[in-house]
Length: 117
View 1 (cartoon, rainbow, N blue to C red):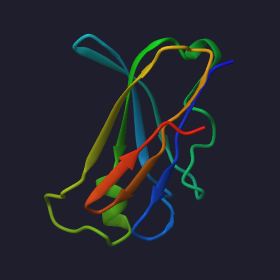
View 2: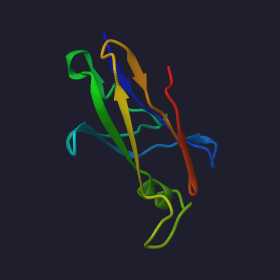
View 3: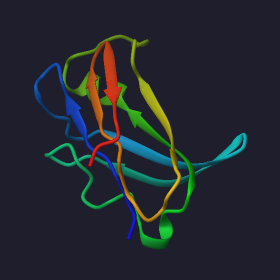
View 4: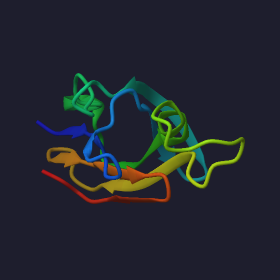
């Protein structure tokens, strides 16, 4: 059974990023539909997978991490305009039977992602 999961690590502080709001969208052509909104726990993970089973279908998805709120809360970013605020990651799911783990590594001035396991 396939599933989609994520977690967020704060590479500047060297610890999981707790309290990061994440929105999940299903993308079709030029439109998108929000299908979930979660907040990371103390381990920087969500309490449950974002999608599982029949909820995960082949197609295009986008995770939007509201990193700016987190960076402000941790004192790493100030001001009205931040270098990194909302971080979108658009990715494809070619086989809904697999596990897709899309982590985010953040700092106030950089981020990276990869397909995890």
